[in-house]
Image (tube, rainbow over all chains, first blue to last red; front, side, top):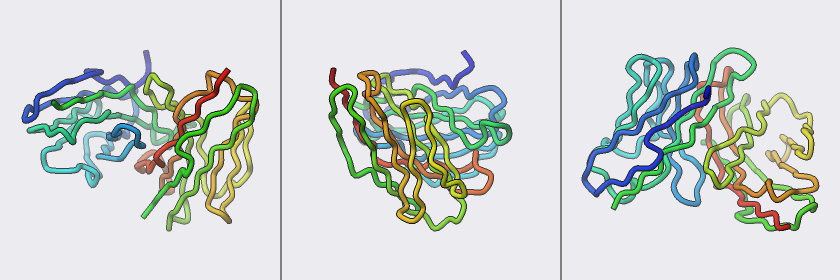
Length: 116
Length: 117
């Protein structure tokens, strides 16, 4: 498929464990976003990349959260020493910056993280 | 700061009824974009529409229509003759910037629509 893919789809972690969530954007999309969606809430912005540059990380809730996109394609969101309040769905979106779909963010299916 | 308010938490209608989902936004940007997304039970966000702040024309797409009014900072979404498949959570969102594509989305809390047969 040509859409945004995320893995794993579900992750259960014990409190204190580190987790890594992967996002494969649509090929050629320059922009990549991570959002966190708590149960019953709207998605909230975490961080944004343009190619490999992380241009905005203002939404990362703590220094336990770290994101990277080293080659400007696949991105990984890492959460260290997970806490129960980290339980949420983590959504990745990619967007072109030119063309008819510019400014439209295409979302992946999300990774549901449960911290016990 | 940007903010999106969806005052209706849940709406329940019977099939074939018309339903309007309200969205009110706040922004200091003179150029901005408004969006509606649908999130069915499967969880994936589905893009419905994008509107820029300079285009106040209402839009109709099949059973869906959108009413953008800058004077009241509202961007309401109407589904005509609702169907069971319309049951989902609907999110209104806002982004700033001239070029778009590089601006984070600010989402409302969503409105859960249930269409009963």
